[in-house]
Image (cartoon, rainbow, N blue to C red):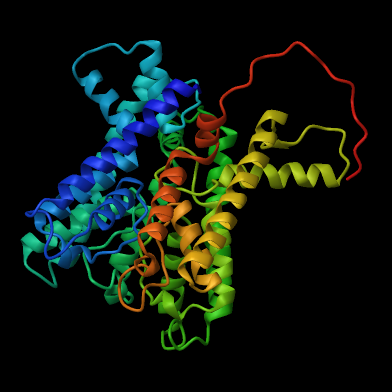
Length: 443
């Protein structure tokens, strides 16, 4: 990781966002009035695969505008630099060291596997999984609408789901399909697969095709962490909202389980919702912010602090509390002090940014603290769920230009990655051959 590479990646995202906003401002891209700040917000949300909206996608954008949003979600999910790198590979151009490092940083890739082979697998897996999702959703939607509309709905929702964007072509998101197993399970599984991370998907492929292949500690932590978070999220939301008339109370047991699963999946990584989230209790809103902060797997289309970051700190904390003389480890693999320090830094910086942004927005926008915190974390962790503006738009629609600008900045920082963005700002300290004596500090 170096500043030059990260600078190129960051400004590439900025260029994509600005180009996207400019195209959305064109008369044939939108319907009715569209201010530049709303176009910029929409473009950022799509590129950063967040899903927060200040315009109703099926009503305020033409087919061309919707197509641009799909492209932005795909580019944002896979990564602009990864797509450029693949283009060079298709042109039979061998990558130099700098280009390989750029592709690795874009995907947060640190494995010893060849990056060129890895990139090809990433795009093959993306195409296969999205093709399957499009087929399933298209035929399901075909029962409710014409084939051409069903196909477009299938394409839009599949790309939004796999890239963890959470945008929907339905005015009420997926509330109209809260009883539909096919739609909720297909979208939920696509969100999970996209949120695991490309390295995990590639390693699982190797594992199933070559039985002697050993999964890395990263993949094992991500898989177990995802399972634990989904199940625990279901139990938390069911226990808190079981008798809530606006959410679960009127649903059957089967429907409660289905929707709590969908809620648990999307609260960590994507902005789809099958329930009216404005009816969530403060307890659920607070628990939701914790799940959103965790997010998905490293190097995935999901945002958040990442599962492995939290897992590393929990493991290190347990070892510290035990006063163990052994280095922290997971799945018989030692966790280095560098990884532990990096995890601590990420969590500390993320907490500081979310608290600061929330306080600023509460004071400048005069909005309720809990709902504002929920929106801030959703934007920063590129999740996209929202309690709403009283209608179908995100809570961010209540903010003025300054407030929306803060949300835009949070989405960009969250998509870039907390550690990467911090490193981009601060830079790397020069190596010093000085060792200071230990200081006695009481804790």
